[in-house]
Length: 148
Image (cartoon, rainbow, N blue to C red; front, top):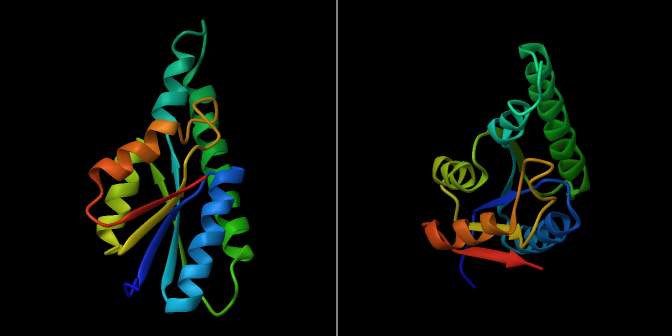
């Protein structure tokens, strides 16, 4: 088996991302790898929906961004707590388009493997869509495991 040292696990709190985390934890515990949990808030996508609402003020969009950041950090904390203590865990909160943001984190942290769910919570949450896993598999420079 390849010696994976740095495993990236994008998460949005969905059941699929939790299953992906379980697989990543199994691999990391066997190989002694580090897990980096990544939450990507696609704030621009969510806020752009407010452009369609009359009288949507800057305050409203700022509050949405703050709420998304809080939600993301809560998801990361919950996932980190679910991992056994003998595995090193890092958490990363990113803002941007999920696919490219995941790949950017993978490059920054020298990922050997990306383990992610096939589908997330969807565009209403502004995070993962089915196309994100497809984008990551297509453009990743390291192996990617997609968990159903």
